[in-house]
Length: 195
Image (tube, rainbow, N blue to C red):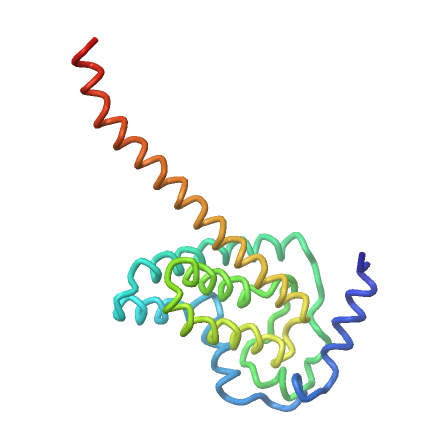
């Protein structure tokens, strides 16, 4: 099992200047994705577009999952106190107008993105084909702008996916209960007449 020291070492090594994560200023699209996804705001217009495209149920489920996941991410970050990557002077980090100083774990951007994307995929695979690249772009933007460690983003993606799966499970349970109540309502008069 990997200990905290090994995990931190892996995180630090992965953030070295490389082709995947250069330290220079990112492409404006990456910056825009990171800025627009703050507080889950990006997912509101995306859900609106999905609804306009006839994917209302998927849009509603996805937006609900993101809305539930965001406060969960914030609660976890209150418990897990982790410093941000030491990259304040890098052009990649300076590209963002925000300079977060809250706990680094988990990436709330990744939490909401994964919750939205996973809920979409569970409801409508066709819509997921369009949403998934946006989810990955948001997650990558948090690494590329050096505001999170890789494990913050991976952890956020995992937490968001779990929230979406839990929501889907609760929804199925609610449907099962509603079906049982309808059946009971249909059967009850039959038995009450013969008692």
